Image 1: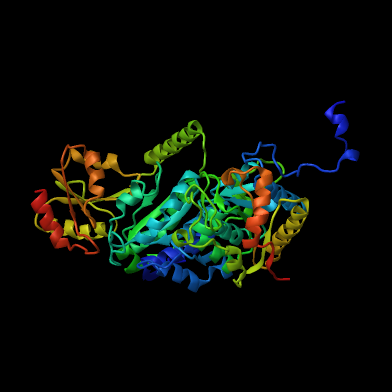
Image 2: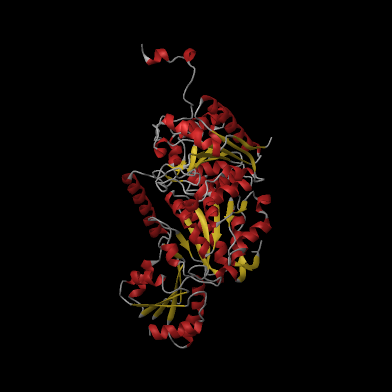
Length: 359
Length: 254
Protein backbone atom coordinates (compact mmCIF):
# COMPACT_ATOMS: atom_id res chain seq x y z
CA UNK A 1 0.00 0.00 0.00
CA UNK A 2 1.39 3.40 -0.92
CA UNK A 3 1.87 6.06 1.70
CA UNK A 4 -1.06 8.30 2.32
CA UNK A 5 0.09 11.90 1.90
CA UNK A 6 -2.13 14.63 3.34
CA UNK A 7 -1.99 18.42 3.41
CA UNK A 8 -2.63 19.97 6.80
CA UNK A 9 -1.57 22.41 9.50
CA UNK A 10 1.03 21.47 12.10
CA UNK A 11 -1.57 21.73 14.84
CA UNK A 12 -3.89 19.34 12.98
CA UNK A 13 -1.00 16.92 12.50
CA UNK A 14 -0.52 16.80 16.27
CA UNK A 15 -4.18 15.87 16.74
CA UNK A 16 -4.25 13.17 14.07
CA UNK A 17 -0.94 11.73 15.27
CA UNK A 18 -2.26 11.61 18.84
CA UNK A 19 -5.29 9.58 17.75
CA UNK A 20 -3.17 7.24 15.64
CA UNK A 21 -0.68 6.77 18.46
CA UNK A 22 -3.42 5.39 20.71
CA UNK A 23 -3.42 8.28 23.16
CA UNK A 24 -5.76 7.66 26.11
CA UNK A 25 -6.60 11.25 26.91
CA UNK A 26 -6.21 14.87 25.84
CA UNK A 27 -7.03 17.76 28.19
CA UNK A 28 -6.77 21.32 26.94
CA UNK A 29 -7.93 24.90 27.05
CA UNK A 30 -8.28 27.13 23.99
CA UNK A 31 -5.50 29.57 23.19
CA UNK A 32 -4.20 30.95 19.90
CA UNK A 33 -2.19 29.81 17.93
CA UNK A 34 -2.80 26.17 18.86
CA UNK A 35 -6.57 25.83 19.21
CA UNK A 36 -6.80 23.61 16.11
CA UNK A 37 -5.35 20.75 18.14
CA UNK A 38 -8.39 20.43 20.40
CA UNK A 39 -10.78 21.52 17.62
CA UNK A 40 -9.53 18.71 15.38
CA UNK A 41 -9.78 16.16 18.20
CA UNK A 42 -13.34 17.23 19.01
CA UNK A 43 -14.34 17.05 15.33
CA UNK A 44 -12.79 13.59 14.93
CA UNK A 45 -14.62 12.20 18.02
CA UNK A 46 -11.94 9.62 18.88
CA UNK A 47 -13.98 8.51 21.92
CA UNK A 48 -16.34 6.83 19.46
CA UNK A 49 -13.54 5.02 17.61
CA UNK A 50 -10.65 4.26 19.94
CA UNK A 51 -12.10 5.25 23.33
CA UNK A 52 -9.81 8.28 23.68
CA UNK A 53 -10.99 10.86 26.22
CA UNK A 54 -10.95 14.47 24.97
CA UNK A 55 -11.96 17.14 27.46
CA UNK A 56 -12.01 20.92 27.36
CA UNK A 57 -10.94 21.94 30.86
CA UNK A 58 -11.91 25.10 32.74
CA UNK A 59 -8.33 26.39 32.64
CA UNK A 60 -4.79 25.46 31.68
CA UNK A 61 -4.21 24.81 35.37
CA UNK A 62 -7.01 22.25 35.48
CA UNK A 63 -5.89 20.71 32.18
CA UNK A 64 -2.34 19.99 33.35
CA UNK A 65 -3.66 18.57 36.62
CA UNK A 66 -5.97 16.30 34.64
CA UNK A 67 -2.84 15.16 32.82
CA UNK A 68 -1.21 14.57 36.22
CA UNK A 69 -4.16 12.42 37.32
CA UNK A 70 -4.35 10.48 34.07
CA UNK A 71 -0.60 9.90 33.97
CA UNK A 72 -0.76 8.78 37.59
CA UNK A 73 -2.98 5.90 36.51
CA UNK A 74 -0.48 4.88 33.82
CA UNK A 75 -2.42 6.27 30.86
CA UNK A 76 -0.97 8.02 27.81
CA UNK A 77 -2.22 11.56 28.31
CA UNK A 78 -1.35 14.92 26.81
CA UNK A 79 -2.15 18.59 26.81
CA UNK A 80 -1.32 21.49 24.54
CA UNK A 81 -1.20 25.24 24.92
CA UNK A 82 0.67 28.36 23.91
CA UNK A 83 3.10 30.48 25.92
CA UNK A 84 0.84 32.24 28.48
CA UNK A 85 -1.04 28.98 29.01
CA UNK A 86 2.19 27.06 29.50
CA UNK A 87 3.17 29.56 32.21
CA UNK A 88 -0.02 28.55 34.02
CA UNK A 89 0.79 24.87 33.60
CA UNK A 90 4.26 25.10 35.12
CA UNK A 91 3.13 24.28 38.65
CA UNK A 92 1.57 21.07 37.39
CA UNK A 93 4.56 20.28 35.18
CA UNK A 94 6.84 20.55 38.21
CA UNK A 95 4.57 18.12 40.12
CA UNK A 96 4.54 15.72 37.16
CA UNK A 97 8.34 15.81 36.97
CA UNK A 98 8.59 15.45 40.76
CA UNK A 99 6.26 12.43 40.75
CA UNK A 100 8.20 11.03 37.73
CA UNK A 101 5.13 10.66 35.54
CA UNK A 102 5.27 10.28 31.76
CA UNK A 103 3.13 12.61 29.65
CA UNK A 104 3.26 14.77 26.54
CA UNK A 105 2.94 18.56 26.55
CA UNK A 106 2.79 20.72 23.43
CA UNK A 107 3.72 24.42 23.43
CA UNK A 108 2.99 26.29 20.20
CA UNK A 109 4.90 29.43 21.18
CA UNK A 110 3.72 33.00 20.66
CA UNK A 111 5.35 36.32 21.42
CA UNK A 112 5.54 37.59 24.99
CA UNK A 113 6.04 38.58 27.71
CA UNK A 114 2.61 38.87 29.23
CA UNK A 115 -0.37 38.54 26.93
CA UNK A 116 2.05 39.61 24.19
CA UNK A 117 0.98 38.71 20.71
CA UNK A 118 -0.46 35.74 18.88
CA UNK A 119 2.36 35.83 16.33
CA UNK A 120 5.15 33.21 16.41
CA UNK A 121 8.09 33.39 18.77
CA UNK A 122 10.76 31.17 20.32
CA UNK A 123 11.04 33.13 23.55
CA UNK A 124 10.02 30.20 25.80
CA UNK A 125 13.35 28.42 25.29
CA UNK A 126 14.61 29.36 28.77
CA UNK A 127 11.25 28.49 30.34
CA UNK A 128 11.30 25.05 28.75
CA UNK A 129 14.90 23.88 29.02
CA UNK A 130 16.04 25.71 32.16
CA UNK A 131 13.13 24.77 34.42
CA UNK A 132 10.26 27.23 34.38
CA UNK A 133 8.48 25.59 37.28
CA UNK A 134 10.04 25.20 40.71
CA UNK A 135 12.77 22.73 41.62
CA UNK A 136 15.56 20.88 39.80
CA UNK A 137 13.75 19.13 36.99
CA UNK A 138 14.14 18.69 33.26
CA UNK A 139 11.74 18.34 30.36
CA UNK A 140 12.63 16.18 27.37
CA UNK A 141 12.26 18.90 24.73
CA UNK A 142 11.63 18.20 21.04
CA UNK A 143 11.71 21.09 18.56
CA UNK A 144 9.93 20.26 15.27
CA UNK A 145 10.74 22.27 12.14
CA UNK A 146 8.03 20.85 9.88
CA UNK A 147 4.47 19.58 9.91
CA UNK A 148 5.91 16.10 9.40
CA UNK A 149 7.91 16.42 12.60
CA UNK A 150 4.84 17.69 14.46
CA UNK A 151 3.22 14.38 13.59
CA UNK A 152 6.32 12.25 14.22
CA UNK A 153 7.22 13.81 17.55
CA UNK A 154 3.93 12.81 19.19
CA UNK A 155 5.05 9.17 19.17
CA UNK A 156 8.68 10.06 19.89
CA UNK A 157 7.67 12.30 22.79
CA UNK A 158 5.40 9.68 24.36
CA UNK A 159 7.96 6.92 23.84
CA UNK A 160 10.73 8.93 25.49
CA UNK A 161 8.39 10.01 28.30
CA UNK A 162 7.52 6.39 29.09
CA UNK A 163 11.10 5.17 28.62
CA UNK A 164 12.32 7.56 31.31
CA UNK A 165 9.13 8.20 33.34
CA UNK A 166 9.48 11.90 32.67
CA UNK A 167 7.36 14.56 30.98
CA UNK A 168 8.25 15.36 27.37
CA UNK A 169 7.35 18.55 25.53
CA UNK A 170 7.05 19.44 21.88
CA UNK A 171 8.30 23.03 21.65
CA UNK A 172 6.88 24.39 18.40
CA UNK A 173 5.90 27.92 17.45
CA UNK A 174 3.07 29.67 15.67
CA UNK A 175 4.66 29.17 12.27
CA UNK A 176 4.97 25.39 12.60
CA UNK A 177 1.52 25.17 14.18
CA UNK A 178 -0.26 27.22 11.54
CA UNK A 179 1.56 26.45 8.30
CA UNK A 180 0.24 23.78 5.96
CA UNK A 181 2.53 21.15 4.49
CA UNK A 182 2.26 17.66 3.21
CA UNK A 183 2.56 15.03 5.86
CA UNK A 184 2.57 11.25 6.06
CA UNK A 185 0.63 10.33 9.17
CA UNK A 186 1.89 7.44 11.29
CA UNK A 187 -0.02 4.13 11.20
CA UNK A 188 -2.76 3.42 13.74
CA UNK A 189 -1.75 1.51 16.82
CA UNK A 190 -4.14 0.30 19.50
CA UNK A 191 -4.39 1.91 22.92
CA UNK A 192 -2.72 -0.06 25.67
CA UNK A 193 -4.96 -2.53 27.47
CA UNK A 194 -5.36 -2.46 31.24
CA UNK A 195 -3.13 -5.55 31.50
CA UNK A 196 -0.44 -3.92 29.35
CA UNK A 197 -0.56 -0.78 31.48
CA UNK A 198 -0.18 -2.82 34.68
CA UNK A 199 2.87 -4.53 33.22
CA UNK A 200 4.39 -1.38 31.74
CA UNK A 201 3.70 0.89 34.73
CA UNK A 202 3.53 -1.25 37.91
CA UNK A 203 3.77 1.98 39.92
CA UNK A 204 0.47 3.36 38.55
CA UNK A 205 -2.55 4.09 40.78
CA UNK A 206 -5.02 1.65 39.27
CA UNK A 207 -6.78 0.29 42.32
CA UNK A 208 -4.86 -1.90 44.77
CA UNK A 209 -5.09 -5.67 44.44
CA UNK A 210 -4.64 -7.59 47.70
CA UNK A 211 -1.19 -8.85 46.78
CA UNK A 212 0.63 -5.54 46.52
CA UNK A 213 1.27 -2.42 48.57
CA UNK A 214 -0.65 0.74 47.74
CA UNK A 215 0.66 2.74 44.80
CA UNK A 216 0.97 6.35 45.87
CA UNK A 217 1.63 9.05 43.28
CA UNK A 218 3.24 12.00 45.02
CA UNK A 219 6.12 14.45 44.83
CA UNK A 220 6.03 15.09 48.59
CA UNK A 221 8.78 13.97 50.96
CA UNK A 222 9.24 15.94 54.16
CA UNK A 223 12.47 14.21 55.20
CA UNK A 224 15.23 16.25 53.51
CA UNK A 225 17.65 13.32 53.48
CA UNK A 226 15.18 11.22 51.49
CA UNK A 227 14.21 14.21 49.32
CA UNK A 228 17.87 14.68 48.49
CA UNK A 229 18.08 11.02 47.47
CA UNK A 230 15.02 11.52 45.26
CA UNK A 231 16.75 14.47 43.60
CA UNK A 232 19.95 12.48 43.13
CA UNK A 233 17.87 9.79 41.43
CA UNK A 234 16.30 12.42 39.15
CA UNK A 235 19.72 13.81 38.26
CA UNK A 236 21.06 10.34 37.44
CA UNK A 237 18.09 9.85 35.13
CA UNK A 238 18.70 13.22 33.46
CA UNK A 239 22.34 12.20 32.98
CA UNK A 240 21.23 9.00 31.22
CA UNK A 241 18.93 11.02 28.96
CA UNK A 242 21.76 13.44 28.13
CA UNK A 243 23.97 10.51 27.16
CA UNK A 244 21.42 8.61 25.07
CA UNK A 245 18.80 10.92 23.61
CA UNK A 246 20.55 13.87 21.95
CA UNK A 247 19.14 14.50 18.48
CA UNK A 248 20.22 17.05 15.89
CA UNK A 249 20.46 17.57 12.14
CA UNK A 250 23.36 18.95 10.08
CA UNK A 251 22.82 20.79 6.80
CA UNK A 252 25.93 21.53 4.70
CA UNK A 253 28.10 21.45 7.80
CA UNK A 254 30.89 19.17 6.51
CA UNK A 255 32.88 21.94 4.75
CA UNK A 256 31.44 24.94 6.58
CA UNK A 257 33.55 27.91 7.66
CA UNK A 258 30.60 29.45 9.47
CA UNK A 259 27.78 27.78 11.33
CA UNK A 260 24.22 28.90 11.81
CA UNK A 261 22.65 27.28 14.88
CA UNK A 262 18.86 27.36 14.83
CA UNK A 263 15.86 25.25 15.87
CA UNK A 264 12.25 24.94 14.74
CA UNK A 265 10.94 27.51 12.27
CA UNK A 266 14.20 29.51 12.49
CA UNK A 267 16.04 26.47 11.16
CA UNK A 268 13.68 26.30 8.18
CA UNK A 269 14.46 29.93 7.35
CA UNK A 270 18.18 29.31 7.88
CA UNK A 271 18.17 26.56 5.24
CA UNK A 272 17.49 29.31 2.73
CA UNK A 273 20.25 31.44 4.27
CA UNK A 274 22.72 28.60 3.70
CA UNK A 275 21.72 28.47 0.02
CA UNK A 276 21.99 32.26 -0.41
CA UNK A 277 25.39 32.35 1.32
CA UNK A 278 26.77 29.50 -0.77
CA UNK A 279 25.61 31.27 -3.96
CA UNK A 280 27.91 34.09 -2.82
CA UNK A 281 30.74 31.64 -2.20
CA UNK A 282 30.43 31.70 1.60
CA UNK A 283 30.73 28.22 3.12
CA UNK A 284 27.89 28.36 5.63
CA UNK A 285 26.30 25.35 7.32
CA UNK A 286 23.26 24.90 9.53
CA UNK A 287 23.28 22.97 12.78
CA UNK A 288 19.74 22.23 13.97
CA UNK A 289 19.25 20.94 17.52
CA UNK A 290 16.17 18.68 17.53
CA UNK A 291 16.35 17.98 21.24
CA UNK A 292 16.76 21.32 23.02
CA UNK A 293 17.12 19.34 26.22
CA UNK A 294 19.20 17.26 26.15
CA UNK A 295 21.14 19.92 24.22
CA UNK A 296 23.60 18.65 21.60
CA UNK A 297 26.50 20.36 23.34
CA UNK A 298 29.15 17.81 22.39
CA UNK A 299 28.31 17.93 18.69
CA UNK A 300 28.41 21.73 18.76
CA UNK A 301 31.67 21.71 20.73
CA UNK A 302 33.21 19.51 18.03
CA UNK A 303 32.52 22.25 15.48
CA UNK A 304 34.34 24.84 17.61
CA UNK A 305 37.64 23.54 16.23
CA UNK A 306 36.41 23.45 12.62
CA UNK A 307 34.58 26.74 12.00
CA UNK A 308 35.49 30.42 12.28
CA UNK A 309 32.31 31.51 13.96
CA UNK A 310 28.75 30.62 14.90
CA UNK A 311 25.54 32.62 14.74
CA UNK A 312 22.64 31.48 16.90
CA UNK A 313 19.50 32.51 15.04
CA UNK A 314 16.40 32.59 17.23
CA UNK A 315 13.02 34.33 17.40
CA UNK A 316 13.95 35.77 20.79
CA UNK A 317 16.42 38.14 22.44
CA UNK A 318 19.15 35.52 22.76
CA UNK A 319 18.36 32.39 24.73
CA UNK A 320 19.77 29.26 23.06
CA UNK A 321 22.92 31.29 22.30
CA UNK A 322 23.87 30.86 25.96
CA UNK A 323 23.91 27.08 25.57
CA UNK A 324 25.90 27.35 22.34
CA UNK A 325 28.47 29.52 24.12
CA UNK A 326 28.65 27.08 27.03
CA UNK A 327 29.23 24.27 24.55
CA UNK A 328 32.09 25.95 22.67
CA UNK A 329 33.51 27.39 25.89
CA UNK A 330 35.15 30.44 24.28
CA UNK A 331 36.94 28.52 21.53
CA UNK A 332 35.16 30.35 18.74
CA UNK A 333 33.11 33.50 18.32
CA UNK A 334 29.39 32.96 18.97
CA UNK A 335 26.86 35.72 18.34
CA UNK A 336 23.08 35.93 18.35
CA UNK A 337 20.62 37.31 15.85
CA UNK A 338 16.92 37.48 16.55
CA UNK A 339 13.66 39.27 15.97
CA UNK A 340 11.31 39.83 18.88
CA UNK A 341 7.69 39.92 19.88
CA UNK A 342 6.24 37.95 16.99
CA UNK A 343 8.26 39.43 14.11
CA UNK A 344 9.85 36.81 11.85
CA UNK A 345 13.21 37.45 10.15
CA UNK A 346 13.84 37.08 6.42
CA UNK A 347 16.72 35.01 5.02
CA UNK A 348 18.30 38.21 3.68
CA UNK A 349 18.47 39.94 7.05
CA UNK A 350 19.97 36.83 8.64
CA UNK A 351 22.67 36.79 5.96
CA UNK A 352 23.40 40.47 6.60
CA UNK A 353 23.61 39.76 10.33
CA UNK A 354 25.98 36.86 9.70
CA UNK A 355 28.29 39.12 7.71
CA UNK A 356 28.17 41.93 10.25
CA UNK A 357 28.55 39.84 13.41
CA UNK A 358 30.68 36.87 12.42
CA UNK A 359 32.61 37.37 9.17
CA UNK B 1 -4.62 -12.16 81.56
CA UNK B 2 -3.10 -11.67 78.10
CA UNK B 3 -4.51 -9.30 75.51
CA UNK B 4 -5.16 -12.23 73.17
CA UNK B 5 -7.34 -13.83 75.79
CA UNK B 6 -9.50 -10.71 75.96
CA UNK B 7 -9.69 -10.02 72.23
CA UNK B 8 -11.73 -12.94 70.98
CA UNK B 9 -14.32 -12.99 68.22
CA UNK B 10 -17.13 -13.64 70.69
CA UNK B 11 -16.16 -10.53 72.70
CA UNK B 12 -15.78 -8.32 69.67
CA UNK B 13 -18.04 -5.27 69.66
CA UNK B 14 -15.85 -2.99 67.55
CA UNK B 15 -12.68 -3.27 65.49
CA UNK B 16 -10.38 -1.07 63.50
CA UNK B 17 -11.54 -0.88 59.89
CA UNK B 18 -9.46 -3.33 57.89
CA UNK B 19 -8.48 -0.63 55.36
CA UNK B 20 -6.94 1.54 58.09
CA UNK B 21 -3.15 1.09 58.17
CA UNK B 22 -1.25 0.75 61.44
CA UNK B 23 0.37 4.15 60.85
CA UNK B 24 0.35 6.50 63.84
CA UNK B 25 -1.80 9.47 62.84
CA UNK B 26 -0.29 12.95 62.70
CA UNK B 27 -3.66 14.55 63.38
CA UNK B 28 -4.03 16.45 66.66
CA UNK B 29 -6.23 15.16 69.49
CA UNK B 30 -9.82 16.19 68.92
CA UNK B 31 -9.41 16.70 65.17
CA UNK B 32 -12.26 15.46 62.99
CA UNK B 33 -10.00 14.09 60.24
CA UNK B 34 -9.37 10.78 62.00
CA UNK B 35 -13.06 9.92 62.24
CA UNK B 36 -13.74 10.98 58.66
CA UNK B 37 -10.84 8.78 57.49
CA UNK B 38 -12.30 5.89 59.44
CA UNK B 39 -15.71 6.36 57.84
CA UNK B 40 -14.24 6.37 54.34
CA UNK B 41 -12.28 3.19 55.12
CA UNK B 42 -15.43 1.51 56.42
CA UNK B 43 -17.60 2.53 53.48
CA UNK B 44 -15.07 1.37 50.87
CA UNK B 45 -14.66 -1.96 52.69
CA UNK B 46 -18.43 -2.37 53.20
CA UNK B 47 -18.91 -1.88 49.47
CA UNK B 48 -16.09 -4.34 48.69
CA UNK B 49 -14.47 -1.71 46.47
CA UNK B 50 -10.98 -1.53 47.98
CA UNK B 51 -9.28 -3.03 44.93
CA UNK B 52 -10.77 -0.46 42.56
CA UNK B 53 -10.77 2.74 44.59
CA UNK B 54 -8.33 5.59 44.01
CA UNK B 55 -8.21 8.46 46.47
CA UNK B 56 -6.95 11.94 45.68
CA UNK B 57 -5.37 13.66 48.67
CA UNK B 58 -5.04 17.45 48.93
CA UNK B 59 -2.51 19.93 50.19
CA UNK B 60 -3.31 20.73 53.79
CA UNK B 61 -3.58 18.63 56.94
CA UNK B 62 -4.91 15.66 54.96
CA UNK B 63 -1.96 15.64 52.55
CA UNK B 64 -0.84 12.41 54.25
CA UNK B 65 -4.24 10.72 53.94
CA UNK B 66 -2.42 8.23 51.72
CA UNK B 67 -0.51 6.95 54.75
CA UNK B 68 -3.67 5.87 56.54
CA UNK B 69 -5.89 4.06 54.04
CA UNK B 70 -4.73 0.86 52.35
CA UNK B 71 -5.72 1.86 48.80
CA UNK B 72 -4.05 3.54 45.81
CA UNK B 73 -3.68 7.31 45.99
CA UNK B 74 -2.72 10.30 43.90
CA UNK B 75 -1.55 13.33 45.88
CA UNK B 76 -2.71 16.49 44.12
CA UNK B 77 -1.36 20.04 44.05
CA UNK B 78 -3.16 22.55 46.27
CA UNK B 79 -6.77 22.89 45.13
CA UNK B 80 -6.41 20.70 42.05
CA UNK B 81 -7.84 17.45 43.40
CA UNK B 82 -11.14 17.68 41.45
CA UNK B 83 -9.21 18.11 38.17
CA UNK B 84 -6.99 15.15 39.02
CA UNK B 85 -10.06 13.11 39.96
CA UNK B 86 -11.84 14.13 36.74
CA UNK B 87 -9.15 12.52 34.60
CA UNK B 88 -8.83 9.48 36.87
CA UNK B 89 -12.55 8.78 36.57
CA UNK B 90 -12.89 9.51 32.86
CA UNK B 91 -9.91 7.32 32.01
CA UNK B 92 -10.84 4.59 34.51
CA UNK B 93 -14.64 4.40 34.38
CA UNK B 94 -14.92 1.23 36.46
CA UNK B 95 -12.89 2.71 39.33
CA UNK B 96 -14.31 4.51 42.35
CA UNK B 97 -12.69 7.93 42.69
CA UNK B 98 -12.89 10.40 45.55
CA UNK B 99 -11.13 13.58 46.60
CA UNK B 100 -10.45 14.53 50.19
CA UNK B 101 -10.10 18.28 50.64
CA UNK B 102 -10.02 20.94 53.31
CA UNK B 103 -11.65 24.36 53.21
CA UNK B 104 -8.61 26.25 51.90
CA UNK B 105 -7.95 23.62 49.25
CA UNK B 106 -11.56 23.28 48.09
CA UNK B 107 -13.07 26.73 48.66
CA UNK B 108 -10.14 29.12 48.12
CA UNK B 109 -7.32 28.04 45.81
CA UNK B 110 -9.33 25.24 44.23
CA UNK B 111 -12.69 26.99 43.81
CA UNK B 112 -12.57 26.85 40.02
CA UNK B 113 -11.65 23.15 39.88
CA UNK B 114 -14.31 22.31 42.49
CA UNK B 115 -17.15 24.18 40.80
CA UNK B 116 -16.31 22.97 37.30
CA UNK B 117 -15.84 19.33 38.23
CA UNK B 118 -19.17 19.47 40.07
CA UNK B 119 -20.86 21.32 37.24
CA UNK B 120 -19.63 18.81 34.65
CA UNK B 121 -21.29 16.15 36.77
CA UNK B 122 -18.11 14.17 37.19
CA UNK B 123 -18.95 10.83 38.76
CA UNK B 124 -16.71 11.36 41.76
CA UNK B 125 -17.11 11.90 45.49
CA UNK B 126 -15.78 15.11 47.01
CA UNK B 127 -15.16 14.79 50.74
CA UNK B 128 -14.92 18.28 52.20
CA UNK B 129 -13.60 18.84 55.71
CA UNK B 130 -14.62 22.34 56.79
CA UNK B 131 -12.96 23.42 60.03
CA UNK B 132 -12.86 27.10 59.12
CA UNK B 133 -9.09 27.36 59.39
CA UNK B 134 -5.80 26.42 57.69
CA UNK B 135 -4.45 23.74 60.00
CA UNK B 136 -1.27 22.53 58.32
CA UNK B 137 0.28 25.98 57.84
CA UNK B 138 -0.46 27.05 61.40
CA UNK B 139 -3.99 28.36 61.79
CA UNK B 140 -4.48 31.07 59.18
CA UNK B 141 -7.83 32.43 57.97
CA UNK B 142 -9.82 30.17 55.63
CA UNK B 143 -12.57 31.10 53.16
CA UNK B 144 -14.97 29.52 55.65
CA UNK B 145 -13.62 31.30 58.76
CA UNK B 146 -16.59 32.78 60.64
CA UNK B 147 -17.08 36.51 61.15
CA UNK B 148 -15.22 37.59 64.26
CA UNK B 149 -13.31 34.30 64.52
CA UNK B 150 -9.64 34.90 65.33
CA UNK B 151 -6.90 33.19 63.29
CA UNK B 152 -3.18 33.81 62.73
CA UNK B 153 -3.93 36.13 59.80
CA UNK B 154 -6.98 37.80 61.36
CA UNK B 155 -5.85 37.93 65.00
CA UNK B 156 -8.57 40.41 65.93
CA UNK B 157 -11.24 38.27 64.32
CA UNK B 158 -12.48 38.05 60.74
CA UNK B 159 -13.45 41.56 59.68
CA UNK B 160 -16.03 41.50 56.91
CA UNK B 161 -14.96 44.91 55.61
CA UNK B 162 -11.40 43.66 55.26
CA UNK B 163 -11.81 39.96 54.44
CA UNK B 164 -15.30 39.55 53.04
CA UNK B 165 -17.80 36.95 54.14
CA UNK B 166 -17.34 33.30 55.04
CA UNK B 167 -18.21 31.16 52.02
CA UNK B 168 -21.01 28.59 52.15
CA UNK B 169 -19.65 26.74 49.16
CA UNK B 170 -21.89 23.74 49.82
CA UNK B 171 -24.94 25.91 49.10
CA UNK B 172 -23.29 27.09 45.92
CA UNK B 173 -22.48 23.54 44.77
CA UNK B 174 -26.05 22.43 45.48
CA UNK B 175 -27.25 24.94 42.84
CA UNK B 176 -25.32 23.20 40.08
CA UNK B 177 -27.05 20.78 37.71
CA UNK B 178 -24.06 18.43 37.87
CA UNK B 179 -24.36 17.57 41.56
CA UNK B 180 -26.71 14.83 42.71
CA UNK B 181 -25.91 14.95 46.42
CA UNK B 182 -24.66 17.81 48.57
CA UNK B 183 -24.91 17.12 52.25
CA UNK B 184 -23.49 18.73 55.39
CA UNK B 185 -22.57 16.34 58.19
CA UNK B 186 -20.50 16.25 61.39
CA UNK B 187 -18.74 13.60 63.46
CA UNK B 188 -18.72 14.93 67.05
CA UNK B 189 -21.26 12.42 68.44
CA UNK B 190 -21.96 8.73 67.85
CA UNK B 191 -25.28 9.63 66.28
CA UNK B 192 -23.70 12.16 63.96
CA UNK B 193 -21.06 9.62 62.90
CA UNK B 194 -23.71 7.00 62.04
CA UNK B 195 -25.69 9.53 60.01
CA UNK B 196 -22.58 10.79 58.23
CA UNK B 197 -21.55 7.27 57.29
CA UNK B 198 -24.93 6.64 55.69
CA UNK B 199 -24.60 9.75 53.52
CA UNK B 200 -20.99 8.96 52.65
CA UNK B 201 -22.06 5.53 51.43
CA UNK B 202 -24.82 7.11 49.35
CA UNK B 203 -22.24 9.44 47.79
CA UNK B 204 -19.92 6.58 46.82
CA UNK B 205 -22.87 4.59 45.43
CA UNK B 206 -23.94 7.62 43.38
CA UNK B 207 -20.49 7.83 41.83
CA UNK B 208 -20.62 4.20 40.65
CA UNK B 209 -24.22 4.58 39.47
CA UNK B 210 -23.17 7.49 37.24
CA UNK B 211 -25.54 9.93 38.90
CA UNK B 212 -23.11 12.85 38.96
CA UNK B 213 -20.98 14.59 41.52
CA UNK B 214 -21.58 14.00 45.24
CA UNK B 215 -20.25 16.36 47.88
CA UNK B 216 -20.11 15.37 51.54
CA UNK B 217 -19.15 18.33 53.71
CA UNK B 218 -18.03 17.63 57.26
CA UNK B 219 -18.37 20.62 59.58
CA UNK B 220 -15.29 19.87 61.65
CA UNK B 221 -13.10 20.92 64.54
CA UNK B 222 -9.49 22.04 64.66
CA UNK B 223 -8.58 22.05 68.35
CA UNK B 224 -5.00 23.20 67.74
CA UNK B 225 -5.96 25.95 65.32
CA UNK B 226 -8.87 27.06 67.43
CA UNK B 227 -6.68 26.85 70.58
CA UNK B 228 -9.28 24.83 72.51
CA UNK B 229 -9.52 21.43 74.15
CA UNK B 230 -11.28 18.76 72.08
CA UNK B 231 -14.34 19.10 74.33
CA UNK B 232 -14.40 22.86 74.00
CA UNK B 233 -13.98 22.53 70.23
CA UNK B 234 -17.04 20.34 69.86
CA UNK B 235 -19.10 22.73 71.95
CA UNK B 236 -17.80 25.77 70.05
CA UNK B 237 -18.54 24.06 66.74
CA UNK B 238 -22.11 23.29 67.77
CA UNK B 239 -22.70 26.82 69.06
CA UNK B 240 -20.93 28.79 66.32
CA UNK B 241 -20.35 26.68 63.22
CA UNK B 242 -23.71 24.90 63.05
CA UNK B 243 -25.82 28.10 62.95
CA UNK B 244 -23.83 29.35 59.92
CA UNK B 245 -23.28 25.90 58.37
CA UNK B 246 -26.51 24.06 59.24
CA UNK B 247 -26.34 20.27 58.99
CA UNK B 248 -28.48 18.27 56.62
CA UNK B 249 -28.95 17.59 52.94
CA UNK B 250 -28.65 20.64 50.70
CA UNK B 251 -29.52 18.46 47.74
CA UNK B 252 -30.30 14.78 47.46
CA UNK B 253 -31.52 13.59 44.07
CA UNK B 254 -33.02 10.11 44.26
